[in-house]
Image (cartoon, rainbow, N blue to C red; front, side, top):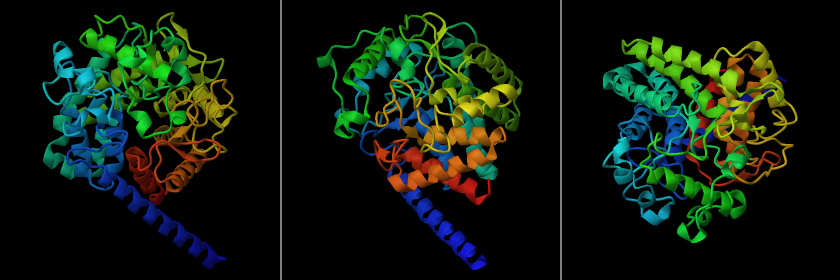
Length: 450
């Protein structure tokens, strides 16, 4: 029996070595020299929260490259503090991606809001995972980080980013950051946004083109109608100079996932401040205020999950989706909330332990679609976050099962963008960078026995 067990350990170790080598190859192939693209096909530029997750994985390969990943992104930060959701590579043909730089017109339309003259960027944002990624990149090699002055250089930029969200995006006046476009929370076409999105008049069909359908099946992607509404929202924001005070924001929502990640990053920013000799107090105080607001505004006690709040009528949106589980990463949630949230994750809505990873939308919901982007499929980045949240609240066995499922799905699908939660079939793009990067991170956890 002992010999059999030892052979099993050797096989697992060998599998993990091969998986690690394959993940490294994806990141090397998608490296541009200054940053990492999510994929060479559909996403040929640098994306904001992608780069944060990529840096978390890169720290196991090269802490310096992880730092460079974040520095590259932050070099495109606007003077008002926002980190744009796309930084465009001028060497990539404009027709390779839409909305392209000539749609966003950041250097001209965004000049009044502090957009840089170069590079061109989008004007919206994505979830603020960056301070957390920067702190983890530092911890991977503190001596190298100190030698390069990494934390000192990024501290000011990350603080400005968080201040932008507090000063310009508290559209409800209750302390939470609001999103103004479905692309901002990262869950682009989630059923969470159906009600507020229906208030948006779609852009005329002939006024835009879709480059995404050249690389991915239409059944996997948002519908043409949803896309037309995304375009109209972005165009309106652009035509108001990306100025939150001047833009009416027909779509304005307080999202639990976005704010949970802001809280986690506020704590990381406080650690960064302390490490560079600055006062960590303001960051920790902001995190505590945000946590209180998150609980007061977005905890749906009836459904035992966090929910998005539509600021149009100040009501919780009655949709159960993966963003409602992401507050598991928030330190210090009340024990009854943690217990209820964990039960929701393992219950019929998400099937944690029986589904492949964590579905992006309620398995029993009327809009569930196992193939279509954020309307059902399981994503690797949200699984990574929930894994760490479960581990932090002491649900170590569930966290370990989720980790194993993540690694199995990454291996079986060739580092797919997302998977069918029922069958585990890979969907979307293969050789996806954050899938490979977070695989490296979870392999390091597995090797450390976590």
